[in-house]
Image 1 (tube, rainbow, N blue to C red):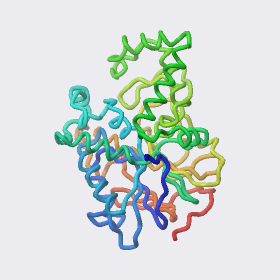
Image 2: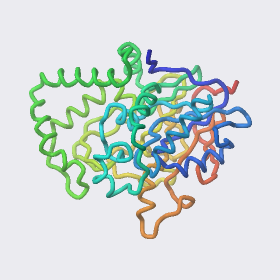
Image 3: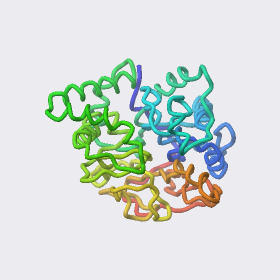
Length: 361
């Protein structure tokens, strides 16, 4: 039976941010953390990935294959991110051309070249990913890709189906569409999606106002527990903005400012900046503080995604930016030390932690 909430290993952990197919960055980070090629560590530390191991980068198959070997050896754990879920449910989104050949033409504009998943490996990969949890936790720590919202966690635990994450996802989605279908704006939503599907990925021209799409996206972010936990809660915006290579009509919400539990939470997902410069165009302003700061009402939430998923921009720049000089980083948070290690070898302390101390056992 599928278990969406599973238990973190005890002892010291290295919690790795969104990798997004950046295979070389992962290899460099693992070396700086002290892991060997199989994911073993001389102090018996364990690796935990916050999801989004795939998409956008040059070698998602290599990242996933390495993780599977390390996981099977008992050295690495992960939670599902929204990008893994897209593969599981068959939703071909931006940057997934390595898995969905129909994305090749669109994705080539930004991400080429990349390694394709070999023929015959799609179903086994989906079956294996479908066993990965949405939440990992223990008494001192919670890991989820995008948001810890207690109501969504409870709904997940109570509503997940024995037949797995994909069927549960679709069931919640169907229920959401049925409920929205009773609203007077739902027909407008379907019309907007049909007419403006291509325009949503055109960075050069904003689509016309899509108020019904904004309503539906907001509702989906709040009432679909798997989406809430893996894509985050959202809030209404007055004007759309372009991010993640599509126009968005609702914006990500800083849920951590309402998180009041004592247990620390580590997430990825949010394209955090280390140097204070904007990484992606947005209207959200989620991180007004320095990149090493703990977040939230109790200062016990940390986002470990430092935007390595945008390194395709480095490769397409004139001249190209070498990885060791990139401001876009892959990072790990060492727990319980609460220090950061980056793929370029730099080490930095975090600041402002206000939660209970983690304890390596």
